[in-house]
Length: 99
Image (spheres, rainbow, N blue to C red):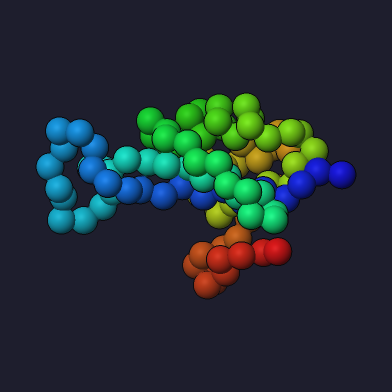
């Protein structure tokens, strides 16, 4: 039986050479943490949050038996098809966790 792993990108710090913007995340570094049920976490720097970049990391680090939980961001649609199950939380409905 596969494990449950949550994934959701975040943006931290400032990209080298970028100027701080008043809003948005374009000047920050994108990080993708994968959080396994039970507390193990692995975090990865990603060049962008395009589905190709996200899928590459997720597919290389999770078994196909995994139950993947993400938000509804479009870059997870294709990625989630490679796993036993793909559940999505709906931030718009104030949902931030599923299990």
